[in-house]
Amino acid sequence: MTELIKAFTTGITAFVATNLDDIVILMLFFSQVTALFRRRHIVAGQYLGFGALVLATLPSFFGSAFFPRPWIGLLGLVPIAIGMSRLLSPDSEDDDDEISDEQPEGNWFTSFLAPQTYSVAAVTFANGGDNIGIYVPLFASATWESLLVIVTTFFSMVGIWCYAAYRLTRVDTIAQSLTRYGNQLVPFVLIGLGVLILIDSHTLEDRGLTVIALVLSSMGLIHLMRSHVPTFSKDLGE
Image 1 (spheres, helix red, strand yellow):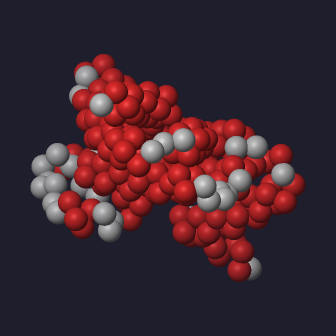
Image 2 (cartoon, helix red, strand yellow):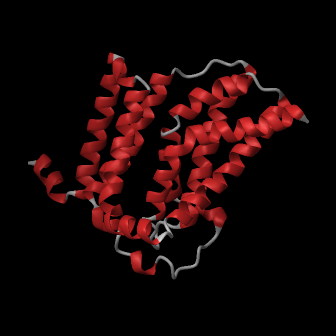
Image 3 (cartoon, helix red, strand yellow):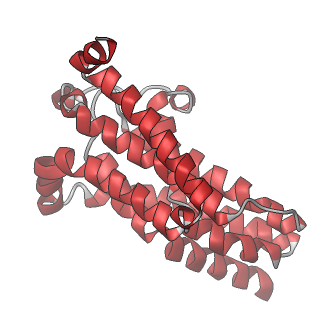
C-alpha cells in the first residue's frame, strides 16, 4: 500500500511539474471556442496528445531504445505552423464566436476524428519535451503496479487540468482579457512555443536537423501563403 501511495504522489508531482505551461495554452484554446472549434475538441485533443506522449515514453519501461530528444524537438514546427496559419487568417476563427455557446456540444466520439482535435493534440504532443525527459526515467524505474497507478493518475489529472483551465477563463478579469486580446495573442504564443521547443530540445545545435527544420518551415510557409493569400499564388506562377 505504501508503494501505491508513493506512486500516486509521484504521478501528481510529475504531472504538475511537466504541465504547468499546458494550462496557459489550454486557457488560450478555451478562449477561442467557436461553433467550429468546440470545448470537446480541446478536451479530446488534450487527451490524445497526452496519450501519445505516454505511449511514446512507455518503451522505456521495457528498456527499449528511444528517439533522441533533438529529433523530438522537430515537433516544435507543428505549433509554429498552426500559429502562422492563424496569423495569416485571423478572421476565420472569429466568424462564429457569437453562436458558440448556443450550439449543442455534439458527439464525443466524432470529436476524436475532427481536425480541430488533432490540432490541439499536435500542440500538446509537441510541447511534451519536458514530459518525455521526466517520464522516461520515471517509467524505467517503475513496477507494473506503480506504472498502472502513475498512468491512471496522469489521465485523471488531464481532466482536472482541462476543467481548471476552463474555469479560469470564466473569471471575469481573465475572460475579458482573453476575449479582447486572445485572437491576437494565440498565434504568437504558438509560434513562440514552437521556437522554445526547438531551442530547449537542442534541435538547432545539430546542423542536419537545422537544415531539415528550415526546409520543412519553408515548405510549410509556401503552402500557407498559397492557401491564405490568393495573390501570392498568382505571383509565383508569373
